[in-house]
Length: 279
Ligand code: SIN
Ligand code: MN
Image (cartoon, rainbow, N blue to C red; front, side, top):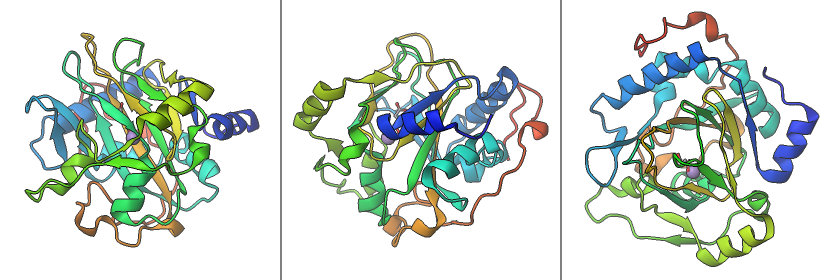
């Protein structure tokens, strides 16, 4: 399962997202989970914690730091749909993250558009970029699923509420934390959701959610006793390299390596389930 059908492409164009179930099987998901947990356990600047200071919120840059995720982003089940949506074969990963949304302690992602961060902070010229999110756990109504406003991507970049950078020099913290730097204004959310409602990306582990870089999205706290881990890869056109990647943002937030990805089978190279196969 790689190629998107015409119906899927049409649905993606209309809604700004598409959930494909059953893309990765249980063995593959187990390998991804093991690799994610190994990264969560590693003390590194690429790891962020929740406001409680202890619960892991996310790890960034896994497509570069882990053999397992480096393989995943080249898997035709990921790369091919991304190529179809962006409309070019030459894509690279601008950003990757594994959001933990831990049981009981996983915090919110406020309503936002992704592209505003990449445009404002990195100088990405155009929204020629698509997100592919792999559900590492089942996302359900109760464990803080991603919420999306269907069709909101068609409004382009909205004016954002923005908050000032931290004075202590850790300026990029607000690009990842529960209080985000750029958020969608409440009036816009009210108007957009009145028109098209709010959808939740619920589905079994191994599903892949494709979503537009300009769709309005966010997620609530996870007060359930079940984790909702999700790995998100942002495939950018190699011809759309940011003019100032990062301007100081670390590599794990804004990749400097725009070498186009080529498809490669990942399934055959899997470590046995349960083995932390992290490079
Ligand atoms: C989430 O993991 O719920 C939010 C992800 C995102 O905004 O990219
Ligand atoms: Mn986002």
